[in-house]
Image (cartoon, rainbow, N blue to C red; front, side, top):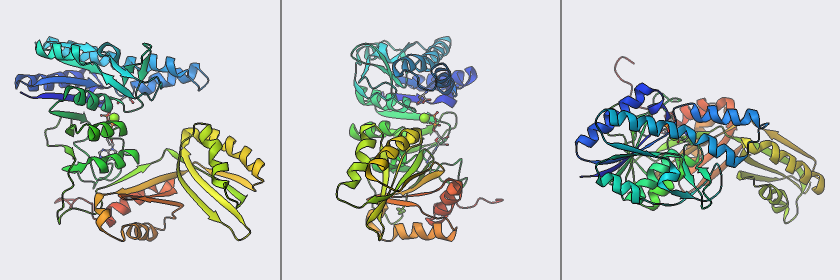
Length: 412
Ligand code: ADP
Ligand code: ASP
Ligand code: MG
């Protein structure tokens, strides 16, 4: 008998009919004799709706503690509905919010981290033959405040519970039948991957593939939780996230392409090129709690430098204000910004053993006349910043250039 944690995302519980379908599915697993813990998200669109309400009443700056009290209600609704649907079908079930389980987190409201999980109640319920339904995305801090884990956080609840319970598998059920070479909604020729390593999945998630929240992949890697992404309502093997890197001739150099429209770019021009200048520019940005992603510094011939970096789009205005102040202080020429950018990244462990991957990427973009504004590389990824309007073209061109396109089906 196996212990399985199953997480169902927003679209999979988006209507009462879907919740009933999920209940049927859980019932079938239960009949096979497995112990099941189910984690659910809020009904699709609900979290956005709640955030919007908070924004309207708070002049765009909701108090984080109260925002968490409110957005956590989305998941509270779906756990109760699913438990009702299960009980109606003769499956004993019980629902718990994050704080009822005691999913203890730190106090960083809206982006809290899980510190520990008390599994006493869950184990007792499983022993008594009940399916346990837990609210995703939420926890409670030492002081008893409700916290949430960041957008997409139900994935992390699922994996963290699987780790705490030493589950045999954590299954992430969603509206696609696995992890694809890139977002199948952007590239119809994307292919489902049988397997992907934790390391690659972590890069894909942190570079913008929202199919799994980054922290869920970190957790799964750290505690070696067998993790699988599957379609909620279609049969299939899905995608397994694994530890092992297979050395096979078939192994593609690139496993996937990720992209992200959430960044904005800022440039400070004509800064005197002296030691410590990067620190003088980025120190105040970091003191303002703004995270910087990519950085490029160019030296001009007149002993000044142009310094460019990217930040999350939500931080763009604050970063611009901080940078204007720095520019005045350093006697820089000007500050310019651009929000119409996008980042495209190719990811693959195969890059370690193959040279020339980056140039192949640049060649494919050049052929489409797409200008590269910034570049950054690491052992298993290459990222470029381009103009946002070319994003989809770039992703498709790279997908073809790295031979990731699905073979054409007959009749296509
Ligand atoms: P859920 O509500 O179930 O958590 P999400 O919307 O968070 O679902 O994640 C699933 C979506 O992730 C898919 O509908 C797909 O558009 C998107 N996605 C982005 N990149 C990928 C990828 N590489 N493989 C599969 N899906 C991806
Ligand atoms: N409901 C939350 C969100 O929309 C958490 C999740 O779905 O994973 O971000
Ligand atoms: Mg999600």
